[in-house]
Image 1 (spheres, rainbow, N blue to C red):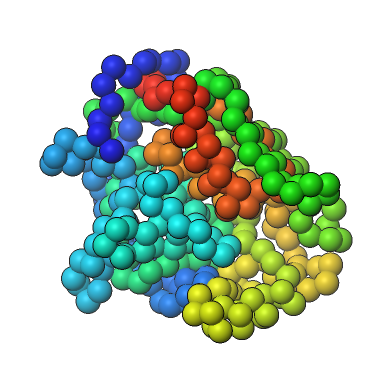
Image 2: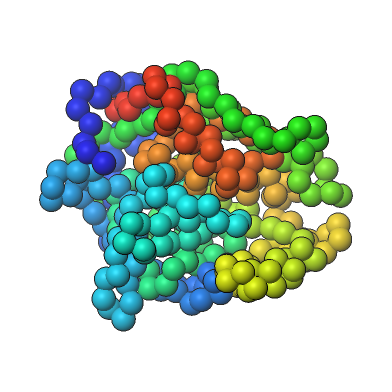
Length: 317
């Protein structure tokens, strides 16, 4: 993506730095993939704001095997590919990275705008099923401010997407606002009732209210999904464990919930991570009813595909 010129300035939203940033030192972490079940080692490396060719760097995934680089995959919505229960990016040369959402949300919330994420398997590790381990690993590394002003994607007109009808209807809408606000409603699990989260997204609110919420699901549905995945050659939940998900049996969660409304908070986490593919925080109010990864992407694609619906802006401290 080329560096923008003539970008308009806006007042810096409260809670955000005035400049872009990268890691102060490399980060190393390992775990296993939720869907592939494969062990993966991850290194996140500092990066300049622009590449040697003058393009904006952003977040770039680099796949390796036995020390050799297989290819790179920028965090770009144009590279998103539909996969069950996760977000996957796939480059033209055939290299892919799946389950990017928790890491992308964490990097955005920690204001790491430019970095190289190096991993030796296809899937970003699920860790404990939340973004908390990423936050706990990124913050001690420190943040180096870069010369570039912090940029945001400002929404200028409302855009919405929807599917289905009645109680199963999924709806999403993004509209103009002076900061990054979200209103998310979720009722996709019988026996747990309606859950809602409303708030302004900042690095602090993400770390305190959203990051610890885990991926979740009914065990009775997970087992058949794993079997179907094997039959179709698609990795689905092969690494799912009670240690990395809020595993539901009947109307209870094994080990209990971290918050009474943990499920909707995790929907917020996934939504933030999927919208992070835009390349910057939004200045918008996002409303979502029963969001999924597919619906999150549809909203982002509709926004970016609607002429005059957004503009890039830079923060004036």
